[in-house]
Length: 145
Image (cartoon, rainbow, N blue to C red; front, side):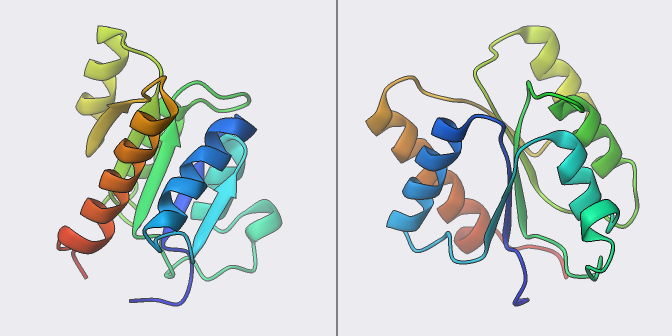
């Protein structure tokens, strides 16, 4: 396991980001979490560009939690870039969104998303969903080296 970022949270909503981080903290899964506020910043981080140009790109997150609807670069565009690049395509990506639109779901799976999760509206359900995601992708799932 690397000492860098384990979870990259790409979320423009401060309240959704705080709820996600709180849920992960309850299961001790937020120690190496980085939150970025839009798709452009996520791509800069992942590909060691812009403010992250000095970052070692080999130090990849173990999981990306990606919002669908964001300013600058949306989640589908970020997903497309991640899954089309040999250096990042193996990183599990979970789309976290409020969109139940079939075209969004189909497009994300066509691009290679690992999971598509609709954010529950109720606080307790949201926390349970995030906790389950974190436990599965960081503890249960066997990642490739």
